[in-house]
Amino acid sequence: MFRMTEHALFVEGIAFWAPGLPDWGSARAAFRGERSAAPSTGRLPTATLLTASERRRAPETVALALEAARMAVAASGRQANALLGVFVSAHGDLPTIDTLCATLACDPLHVSPTKFLHSIHNAPAGLWSMVGGSWQPNTTLTAFNCSFAAGFLEAAVQCSAEQQPVLLVGYDTAATGALTESMASSGALAVALVLAPERSARSSHRMAWSLLRAEKPPIQARSDVSGALANNGMADALPLFEALASLAPTSVTLAQSRKQSLQLTIEPLSANQAATHAEAEHCEK
Image 1 (tube, rainbow, N blue to C red):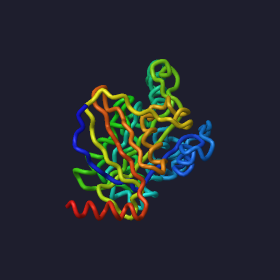
Image 2 (spheres, rainbow, N blue to C red):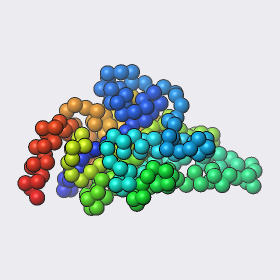
Image 3 (cartoon, rainbow, N blue to C red):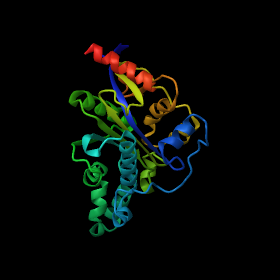
Image 4 (cartoon, one colour):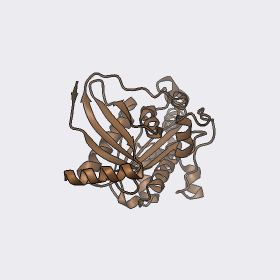
């Protein structure tokens, strides 16, 4: 096993949405076993950043991504326009893609331009730029079952290289129609983090990360809520959010590929701990 250089960043805002767990407070309590852990089959979040007419047309991925992004930015106390963006989804908008494919097969002249627009993988990121108040560059990517890990690595590298805070948003929905025969994704899940290169008064966690060149199996999420969401395309984010809910320092491993993993060590910061880390890093500089 070979470990590359360890880097550190700081978490300033956390967001989580699943049916029955509509915010980070309820999800954190569920991860800790302090409340019911089983997500319900409730409605998708209301994309409050959109107008009423836009919400009626918005697909599931847009509602999930915009709500998670909004909550994370609000929790961080930063302005959206101060944040670079990384948006990640394992499958994109499966319901919209299924509808488009069915229409093409049966009545191709009636393909909806709006649905085609929403089927594009970076549609949620584009709408965030238009309605979320962010004019910063953003990146949209996918890496199938390793999508969240790939998105986290991209966000962490941008955060370090640009010395700017980054908004990371991950989201996936259930497969529908004919796509259920080839895509196993079920349920709905959206997560988001605001990551910063240096500690501030907003920092809730210090996160050290490094890449491992090793065929090491990733650490699996263990909570009941993670089990209920395990078939969603964004399920590889769940071990990290379990760790963020913990009151103790925790390490997790997220698979990047069959031969590379992302090692994360998450440490909750109290006011005193945050000040100690800030002083130590200042001395190192």
